[in-house]
Image (cartoon, rainbow, N blue to C red; front, side, top):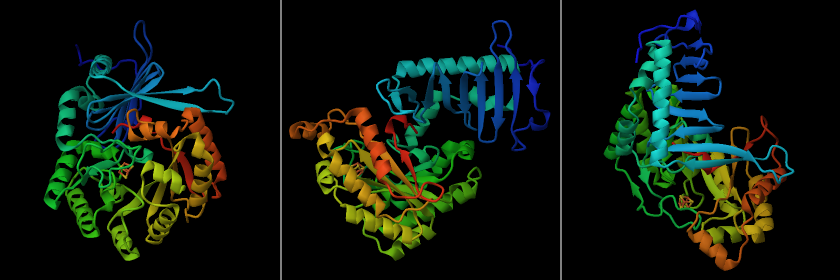
Length: 425
Ligand code: SF4
């Protein structure tokens, strides 16, 4: 394979040829006999290769493949080497406008390997036609398998993140969930909860930042995992926030402003901090908490075996907002089956409407997906509950949204779908 020839008929942007100068640019080669149109775009945070305006491959600054689109789907490579296919379809039965559903499918190792070879082929073609180019260096020398092994030596597979946190720097301060008894959740069922001692967390952070290296330019914010990491006592949490600041300040690739905000999940029942404690955590970087509330109905919560209540959730949000934190309440639709739907929607909307949410907050609606073999599935069967299905969940989501009394953005909180099918880290 020749990599020495520069394009002789490409379109280039001469003012933007240098990556070192933190600028971007592009090169484009038109379609030729048996050769597709090929475009190379680069900027400090990513490199893109585009074939025939249909196939788009995106690489991060370390050359890691981030995503590609092909055959009408989007494929995302997780840092653990898995590949997730995200496709979307419109339900032909629906009369609702723009009713799109996303499907997520993690490919098996053989299919992932097939895509890895395909990506290598596109890169070889780009090197052949563009010749050596700084933007292609990191993607061309990237070792997919070794990189996944390096990631899994530092991290446990990241099971779930809020939709706007997929590009954050995840740091695993805890393992597992301290409660771990919700009937619908199987993320941490096999794990024993553990808080990392300060030295172990510091080492985890050092190794994580070394692993990401230049990729940190494409990341924003810190997400503390796993599960309910912020539910640990306040002193160790303050110490962990200090370690985050200390290690990131020493990391040349981590531009401080990008990582000064720390987010995490929090349940609504296990933490009873004073306002002063929340204020101290906020001053030390804690910025937004994603609150797994699920429902405002006590009957539904009991069925989910999730402690707490609508009053507790409202009280917690009031306190967090007073302390200056942003919040992301997460509620589900479809839980409790069709039998509890009315009560669930009424009481969930009533709970959310009592919260002092502003434009800096966001309400997440998660359409329930029964985990096969889960305790929830067995209990729902025993209780004779009817699963509303995907369309039933979507109808509930729309109804719930219509019951909310907040001003629309930019004056009130946005309401967004939380679709776990699209997640891979
Ligand atoms: S508290 Fe959250 S992480 Fe823990 S079992 Fe319940 S839903 Fe899962």
